[in-house]
Length: 351
Image 1 (spheres, rainbow, N blue to C red):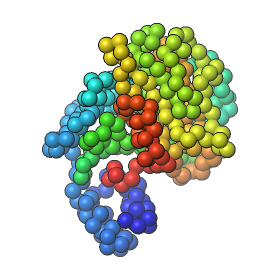
Image 2: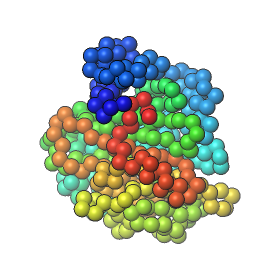
Image 3: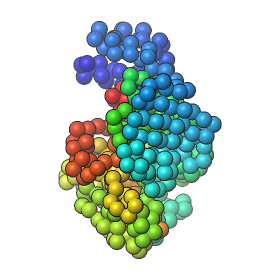
Image 4: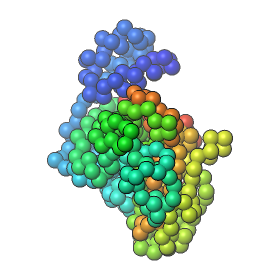
């Protein structure tokens, strides 16, 4: 596929994820090369999914969740309650039986900008003394209450897409920016690709959004995990999280464009039967997208990550791409990361 064809394919996808293949095909024929026509034809095999029939990929949609099985993973994605990303404790590594230890993975919050205002954004243990204010809300994970995921299958993948429009505006801003998240699962992988895109309705000098990446980590005196790994810092023992500390006390990452880390990986190694188990990692595939990142203790380890942090015009879209999942070692994380480094969004059809 040519670079131009690839761009046009993605543009069609971005305009409407719900558009049917038959509707896309006539437009594609007028704009793409004959080789790309063959790829567009693959869209005809992509369909909304009630249950996948592949022995390596299965999905079941219930009233409350989307349940996905691959040969390597078991996952649930909530439709109600605490939403966005994957449900707490449901990313199961079939190789080891390990599962995530927090409140969910790749969880979405709200939109923010630098500088304090009297809008309820607090200081102290939760946020430190870093001056920020709200732009738009609500916090999606706790307050959206319900999402309607679109489940799509194609040649060797299952994708789940979620959307939400912010309806709370803070002083000086309008409401109506949109958030969209895509998660892609394939056989043969202990991890999945995911991304999100924000489309702003406001002009903001520095706009950023907050996610949990990979996700928070519950523990009591380090009983559930061995170590934390931050690629921009190193390996940190569980004992470093015995007492609470604020985000800006230690382990705080703040972007310096002139000196970006080679990789942006945040991970923890779970304990299994009191012994070191696999690593659960969240990888931001373009390090330049990360504006700020916390790894602090506040009753649990809080893996907050903030992205973009640049000037935005109304109508502009921005986002980031990630790998989230299980790995046997830090070296394995590095190998997988380097194969995907620089990715800013999921390619068409989850490829």
